Each structure stands twice: as C-alpha cells, then as structure tokens.
Length: 78
Image (tube, rainbow, N blue to C red; front, side, top):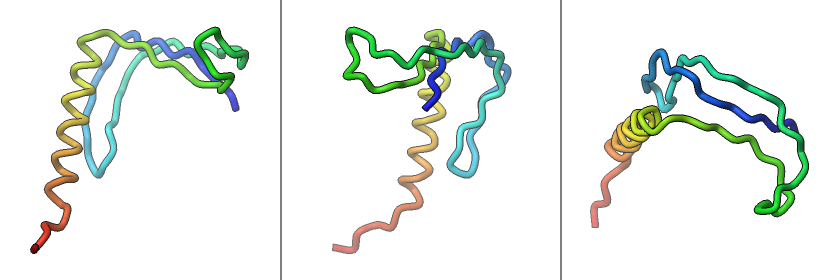
C-alpha cells in the first residue's frame, strides 16, 4: 500500500452531488515512508492536512450530504 503526505494549498471549489463531495484544489502530494511512527500500531496511512477554514467548509458539505441521505431513508411505520 502506498502512503502519502497531502497538504492542501488552496481550494478552488467544493460541491456535493449524488453522494459524493467534489473538491477542486491545489495540493502538495509527497510519498510517505511506510514505517510506523511512535503513535502508530504499524499500519500505513495517508495524511491530509488542511486549514481550519477549509475543514469547516468540508464539514458543512458533509452535514448537507448526511441530511440528504437521512431524508431519503424510509420512515418507520411502528
């Protein structure tokens, strides 16, 4: 498994449709060594770093996506 260090530089746009969040962005993507860190259990992983503002936008889009999903769920008749 390849792992990466991804640093989000600039978000050009974010949108959600059909159950997906689409992000147009500029990012720095660097390969990350697959060695375990002190806080890991030895599992490789990729890391996404983003600013607080971009994280807030992503959170709002995720909440919107979940609300749309909940709206489509069948209501219980009991």
